[in-house]
Image 1 (cartoon, rainbow, N blue to C red):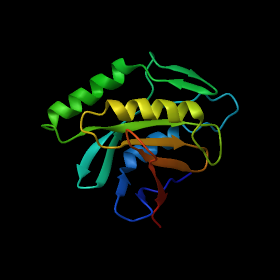
Image 2: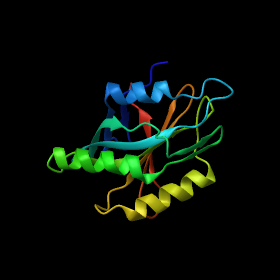
Image 3: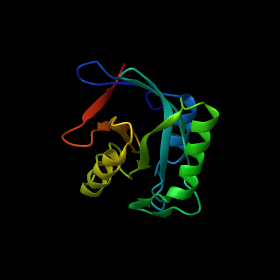
Image 4: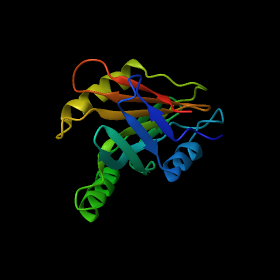
Length: 158
């Protein structure tokens, strides 16, 4: 399975690029088998105007809760990694959002996902929309979620 690296908003004002290593993490945690548990983590990267470069995706830790239809990220391990990247990059690599898997071919957000994303977007200190990614078996769902209102669903750039 090969996921698309470049994504764009409908108005083409926002461009997003996933590093190959991020796409590798997504592919490694796809819920292909019937017993596979959801997985997830945080997305770290850099901001270039309205464009984003996603350089790293953290992987599930032993503190995260995982089941077939649930991923509950523990803040401890993921937050520590984000803080280290922020410090070692002099503040250029930052928390940009969250990712998790769904056991669907073409994933879509649940009501719980939307509620969680809204809460996380409101907590952003830089007031930028939060990047939310759902990894399905065959494709990604990518959305920029603002603190209020509707987000921009991004499409693969082909």
